[in-house]
Image (cartoon, rainbow, N blue to C red):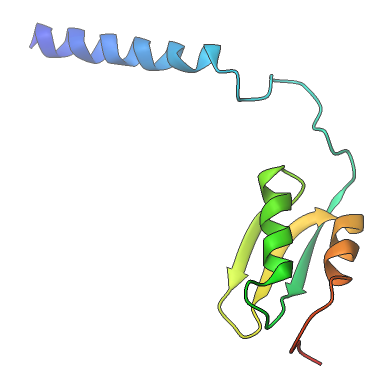
Length: 101
């Protein structure tokens, strides 16, 4: 029983200290790169393959500009996301083929 308790304590202490040296995580208390307020939006994609709207959303998601991306299975697809107003406007200006009217 003492062995199990000792192993549990060892694992618990190791898990508490593992994340302290991470370099990919932003430091606590640092402001985000984008200070614009975000809005929720529904963006309609294009009937093209590959979809240029979805491609751009994925690029923006990788660099952290767009968050909470949900792609709805529809045709053309619809994308729910959180982003600054300027980014939403940019996505809405992308030319589309076969979009909803």
